[in-house]
Length: 303
Image (cartoon, rainbow, N blue to C red; front, side, top):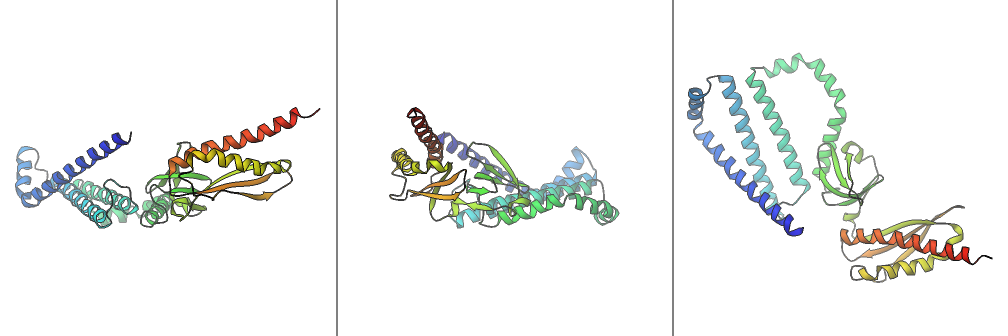
């Protein structure tokens, strides 16, 4: 699978470079031979001036934006010595800005095509524009928060985070939402406008790669803790090369008359989400098996 992904990324990069060279050559050609191209189009296709102006506004604007984006992204990658095809907040932000500018250029081209005066148009629909602005305030709020996230280092693509009640890996950041993949491989969309109103834990930004398994036991099962801790440590023996020696600890949290909250923690030597995922699948089963085993023994020992 890894070989296939590398080949796919290599193919995508080759295709991007081809498009870059093609767009660059096309931009240079249009800048130097604009009048000749216009005459050719008039002769062979149409002499509609509005259409020609709209065509050149969109094509030239789009090519300039694409060229500028590629220059900025490549400069940033070389400056920070990043791998090709890496997903980075700054790169994502530049790509999103390029998309917005391309949409604006397309809008200008449409106005030119239909010979619409921009000032009169926006003055004439001022009331409608105000209503649209009110209705779309959530969208603009999402966009603003999206820009803040993209150009900050608080949250980044590939970070493992907990946002509110959702925990998982960030796979993409857009103007509208953050795409989060949880441990069940579910794709969760979290609106940008709600990101900073929730508690956020960024596990990837922690200096210590601590793994915590939360569970509950009944008050009359408190005697199980030491035995349970020993069994969990034994279950982790297959991954002891990845775990810091002597970092195992069991903590008792909130105690009520019905349940006792418990945390079993250990520290990974370095971040490894695949190993952590395997451990998180195994330990809860071991906890349930141990508690059920003790309960069954208790029942069978009764007269």
